[in-house]
Length: 353
Image (cartoon, rainbow, N blue to C red):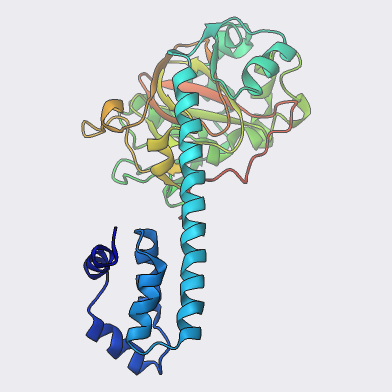
């Protein structure tokens, strides 16, 4: 492009010479931040630096000031291009990983611990284990009625009044209620399907001394879990049909064990671009059940749809997004007291700007 063409391009991108002169005059021949951005924009658009220097000089900018600001703008543009290239390389990695991902989530018998950790934990791969929960005494004995009989007199915290709050999981502290376990279970038995009433991980039920006998009803696969840490590394989920946990990811690996009833989970990989872009802390702004959710072809997330039956356990690797809906009155146990280090509190891409 000749000088005349470059000047035309400069005119399209920049402001008028009169405005430039007024800005310089106001600041004592020093360019304002706005005009420094103008320099960077023109450099990024490919305008010849010499043309920019001539323009500045022609409107009274001292040579030293013009040289300094051009150098600063060039450095800014170089950094921006480097960041853009890094982002593009990362995007290619995400596309590659997505193209190699399995079409469905595997269902299988629980492997020995070393195989489990090598094949699923280390590779950040979900898997459904079909025989873990079936071995539990809990699978044969737990029900709303039996739990009421054994533990009904104990005091618990639970979540109530959730249905009117679309962000009830984020606002869980505002929905805490206190009562006996019997009172809560009676409410569950009488409840119509819905998301108003739920006993969740944040209520810390299994950490209460009176509920420790429930942990004796779990027969865990050898080598998977540190049983001395089980009380602080397990959670009881119990509620009527229709309870929902909104789309989110955890900062630890979890084995989600279904004891009573069915749950539908929708899972998305940590590196799914649409889910990364939707992050809000550990939660997502997307609702997998919304009819307005874009399809994958339209730039929406790729989600796995899993129905977890009684007796099945889903390994949810750290960072995997998941949305959970109870299809029946449901009792679940989530375990994260693995024998491997399992704290990834630093993993919160949703807090980044």
